[in-house]
Structure formats: C-alpha cells, structure tokens
Length: 576
Ligand code: ATP
Ligand code: MG
Image (cartoon, rainbow, N blue to C red; front, side):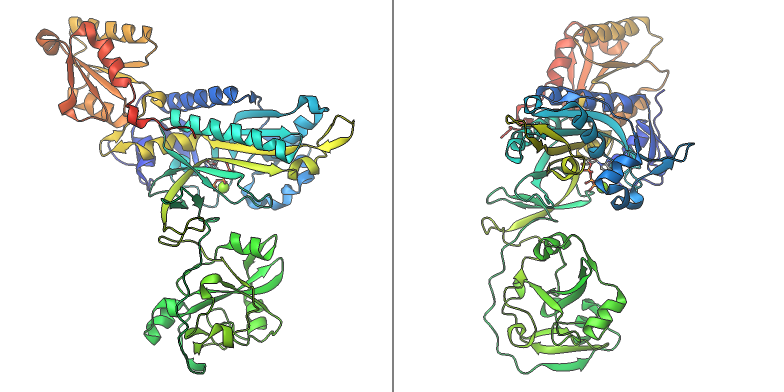
C-alpha cells in the first residue's frame, strides 16, 4: 500500500507537509485529520519506541487513560469553562457531558490520588502515548497543528515542590535523549512558568523558518527563551534632548503609527505607542517605543493579573477621551488611569504621543516632565527582538523561528490541590502532592524530522526513525539472478536487525530511484544484472550525492550497508 504522488497537495504550505503526502506517509481525511499510511505508521511507531525506552529508562511507568473524559473531572479543576471552544465536547445517550482529551492532568490526578496514600509511594511518574484532540483555531501545516494528534504525556507526583525538581530534571534529560535519538536537533528553551516562577518550564524547539514560535538565543551566555518570556536589558538611555513645550497638531485619518509617521515624516521610533489594556477588568495604559510590540505575558506578570486583554472600544474612549490610535499618556480623561511603560522609554523626550483627542497627536513630549507615569512603572514590557541586549550578559540576542516538539513543566499543586490529591507524610499528616507535566507531540515530531531533514528530491530520514532503513532497488525483477541476489541481501540485512524493503515493481529504474529519494530511505542498494557482472551492487546514502556511491561486491554488501547507516560522530549531541 505504497503510493507516491508527483504533485504537491494544494493545501500544503510547508515542505514537510508536502513531503508527508507526496511520499505516501499519510492521507488527508479532512482539515486537521489524517490517516497514517503504512510507511508513516512505521516511522511513528519507531518514534514511539524510542520515547517508551527513554521514559522507562527515566523510571516512568506506562499507563493508558481513556480519550473520553467525564466532564466532572474538568469541572473539579475549573477547566470545563476555561478550556473554551478549543476542547471537543460531547454527550452520551443519558445526556452526560464528556470531553475528548486535549490533555490529561485532571484524569491522571484523579487516578494517582486513588492509588497513592503514603509518602512511601512517591515519587511517581506515569506516562501514556495517546491520541489528543484540540479544536485548533487554525489547523495547518499537516501534523504540526492538527485536530487529532498523538501525544506522549507524562505526569510526575512528589512529596514537595523541592522534591519535584528531581523528577523534572529526569524528564528534561530523557527529552534530550529522545530527540537526539530521533536524529533531531531540538533546543531546550525557557518558557513562561505561569504562577510557579523559576526556571521550571522548558520547551524543546526544532529550528525552522516555518516555526510558529519566536526564540531568542544569546551566543554570549547560552540563554535561550521563547519570545513570550525572553528578557532583555534596557537600551542605554540617549542623552536627554532639550525639547520645547508640547504642541498638539492634527493628524487627520492617520490611525496607526505607520500612517502618522508617514504623515509627519518622522520615524516610528520617535513615537510612543499607547494601548489601553484591561487587567482583570481594570483599565491600564501601556506605553512603549513606537516600533515595539507589547509582550502580554510580561505585562500580566508585571501587573500581577490573571488575565490581560486589549480593552474594548467603550472603555478606551471613556478613560482616555479618544479612540484607539489617538490615545497617549498625557492627560487622559480618567486622571486615575494607571500608566505603565516599557523601560526603554525612561527619560524619553521629544516624543510624539496620541493627544487623547481623535485625529490629533502631541509632539515635543518629555515623558518625565509631561506624562502622567508614576515613578517605578517602567519595566520590560516589550517583545524582545534581534539585537536586543541579553538580560543575563548584555550580548545581543538573535531571534529564530522554532517548532515546539516537547514541553516540560513544573506545575506545583494546581491540580493536586483541586482534587485534594494528598498523601500521608511520616507523621501521618495529609500533604498535597507536587506535580509536573511533560508532553511530546509524537506526530508533530515525525513531521519536524522531515522539516529539518529534506532536500528538493524528498525526505532524508535519520536511520533511527526511517520507515525502512534500506531500500534494495531490484532493477529488473524478471532477471532471476539479480532477483536472487536482491532477496538474499534482504534476508542477510534482516538477520542483522536492519529494516529493508525491496522495490521489485515492474517500473523503470528512474521511477524507482525517484521514489526512493522521495520517501527518503537512508540507504539505497541498486541490484542489477549488469552491475553484478561488473563487480557487485551500488550502495548509496540518501544524504550523499552520487559521487559517493560505493560499488560493493555482493558478498560484502551487508558490511557496506552497515557502514553507511552508522551516524557520523559530528552529529552526536551531548547531554549536559
Ligand atoms: P502549541 O503552542 O504549539 O499549541 P501547546 O503549548 O498547546 O503547543 P502542549 O499542551 O504543551 O502544547 O502539548 C504538548 C505537545 O503536543 C506540544 O509540545 C506539541 O509538540 C504537541 N501539540 C500541541 N498541539 C498540537 C496540535 N494541534 N497538533 C500536533 N501537535 C500538537
Ligand atoms: Mg496549543
């Protein structure tokens, strides 16, 4: 059941998605839903095997929980409401509510709570490899963001938050091994920890231009963080320029910074961008350099709010006197409005700000002199960008795109407290367990391997996760001598534990070579009567060009294939 396609599927935007379909690894059923065909299933299984081995090695125990989850579990944690439309919900015939598992913190906590009663049973880490369902706003890029996907989810339970650090570290190490064994270069980067704080949330990212996350890297000290978290140092303040009195001028029809800057003929950086947010319902004005964007995660942490979102039109008008696009920090209508500013605005003068009057801006603003910004309300509130100074060492950050293939997260007691998941300590007192959760997108990982390793002709699988490691191209299946040589080689390789597929279709050699390149078998062996008569079989690695083809006597073909499958030393990552 192998069928390759010559044409790219119409809906595929990125190479790995095109290749998954063209190489016959999967078939689209509907948006965000795919059937894994035999070749795709083989790779997916190999990735799962690696994950199981590494989870087991780290001391985690495999379980499997239902995909269909009773609503009661989600109501206990409060997520029945907060998950919103991203969670698929359904009813049984008795009208009981269920969710299709988007994740399983609730269910696993409920299970572990019923099993663990004493500190002697801790620490405990369990995992499953199970299908997950999410009604993503924009399913796209094939398996990267699908509605149904395979996830490995692990959960650790410990006697205390401090004890949980060791469970976290064990998973972090296991993840490095998993991705390395899958032939993937995945970088651990710091991610937002929500309420926990500290350094206990890492995402593992595969760098690719198609990645949906921005990651800031510092070459100087090795700091790497998701842009939602990446901290920067304030830019050195420019010498305070003298500026005259503020002057309000009409800027008709110009709403965005680009439009006003064009209208006034000054660069975007001369502006102060002002936005009104609602932090848990309270309006707050956020000011930042005109060419910067707000980092809402940083803003939320700075304000100590649960939720921040842009305020609605009515609120903006009520507190500033103008509509978005014309608001600014100088005399908003509501004199009690809190104003916070990005630290790069400290000491800024000669700026242009919205005048809190539709269609007007005010120039010659010295923030310290003219704006109503309480001292101390300057903080790192903008999204870091290329060239910003690293908060740790001051060297410039470089921003790259990444695909998140895994996430390790110290959760604390959020779920265990909600479920009253307690154990008895040595004094027979009830204590709430501390929890961690650890996900790997198994199907996304498979596609990330392809995104990282392909060329114009097709996939270049690392041997560890290739559907087959070796393709034996039998040029003319009707030639008995060549056919015997091909099948003998297949048997000999299989005896060595190597996966082999023999292409004995009645197709032209060109078609077979094209398909072998497209599917991306790491090693191709060409067996033909002419070659055998001349000296043997041709052994070629997929990632090398033709010039590196080895002619091997048939008797030595196994050794030649094994040599070709060996990874280059340079590809090994270390595990610090
Ligand atoms: P993202 O930010 O990409 O939506 P997430 O933070 O929602 O990911 P988690 O809830 O941490 O993801 O899920 C664990 C892993 O599952 C992720 O690291 C990712 O590899 C994978 N994953 C998440 N959503 C999807 C999806 N829609 N399709 C495929 N894989 C996914
Ligand atoms: Mg998500």
